[in-house]
Image (tube, rainbow, N blue to C red; front, side, top):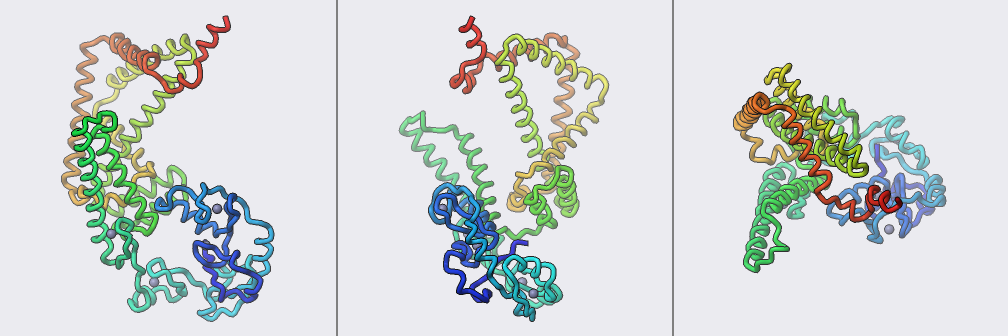
Length: 424
Ligand SMILES: [Zn+2]
Ligand SMILES: [Zn+2]
Ligand SMILES: [Zn+2]
Ligand SMILES: [Zn+2]
Ligand SMILES: [Zn+2]
């Protein structure tokens, strides 16, 4: 537990510490501190990480000196002074009379204290664990703190926040698109072809920005959600848990929101397809670049690769029925989508498509139908054209990609082939 939050009033021998022992971010006593290697100011580690991860704070810069942040350990003097501090237990208002050393405080507060307490996630107050139910039930005791909207920088009451954010979010996106089209028009008028980016690229860029808005809001103050078990998914992402456990968490999340399951399956499959295509593309590019280094081995490799690929597909068609291929493919892209931890789950609730479960189902089956058509076409193609022709074609495309497209790497370092010819 990362607690800290120690004000001056809780330190018994407070004359020992001056302002330098208080974190500039949270204004409390330094808790598990670390320092900036440039200006040597100390911060709570937790405060600092929250600060660095906030996209509003202009990249990973120190809050004080504004230089790119590099962490260094605090001076030993800081640690030894902190060690000598005597601090009241945070549960003193509930009746705990203990005074503890800085170093034993955390253990006492979280394990040994007779008055175990926790921080309410709604109102941020410290509450006795034994009175938790009472706290949640009586509205006067727990008034949720307002949530900050990162789009308009105002604080909104929690119950109203979702509607507000939705509107703000739409306005911001509309403004962004409007700006895109306006600049695009200006550019076409001035015929400035070099500056003008194609409209599809800008639209794609805007789509990415939409995700960034959500991420920004999520980091600053989470959007209240109606989806069950989203916290578990967020937690699993934060803890960077193992691959299979994460998939298990995702499946549990989808089952818990079973009325929206078709939407999740469709969206995650699309995400998985994109991820898989990108993965194959990257691996292919790396292999192609490898062939560049040794032309003889490269040629053998490309021919072998093309031959195995085309005949492998032929064998697949011969022994595996279409329905199984489609099922396995759908399963694989769904699981890849599930394993992708960058998919913004919050987006689902805000996306208009989230409300249209039936349309999502229809879409999904359309995609399956398209896959079936493609497979039928492939079978027809294989029955008409001999495999060696196809393998030759694929090999030719790979040769073209390997030796005819310019790689940025070639400009920087001369390729080994050139070196050997110059030495001989
Ligand atoms: Zn702090
Ligand atoms: Zn600094
Ligand atoms: Zn205590
Ligand atoms: Zn509360
Ligand atoms: Zn707003």
